[in-house]
Length: 189
Image (cartoon, rainbow, N blue to C red; front, side, top):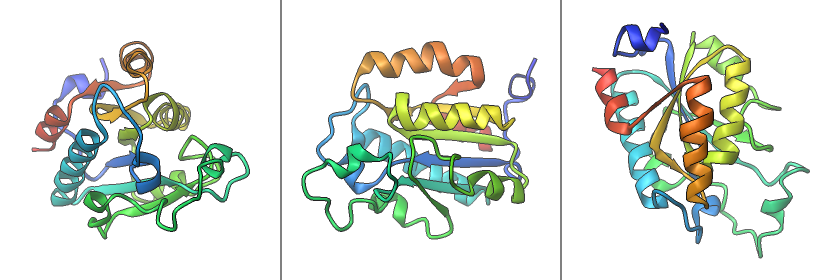
């Protein structure tokens, strides 16, 4: 029985909220499912607010078009000047740590692991877009580094509902726990 089943609360000193790719250029004009971009941002913002109120570590991860493997970003029409900025609902969390990633996962080529370990983090609450890409890759990396992972199913989405559901129903339960925004916030109290 894992630690999350034994108790239904999270230790805020050793738990971090990690939000993947909720930035202007990634969300603009993209149809997401089973939750809209607005729903994902609203739930992620609620989580960030709750974590901040509890004094927990919050990390905003965003894609950077500087990486040679981020071709999909470079292929966008004209890259807007502020495309890589966090959405306003999250940018207001000025105390959050900001990580620029250049691959799908947030660990490879960044100092995310170092920052988490310096803060004594052993559990990551993970959300963002896209479920089968940025979230999945970051989750697999986190699992390999030995972190416990909690997935916030209604604070993530994909372009394809089947991809999202497959990850949440088949992959994520093998490497962590899948919860809702409401349940995670209840676990903070």
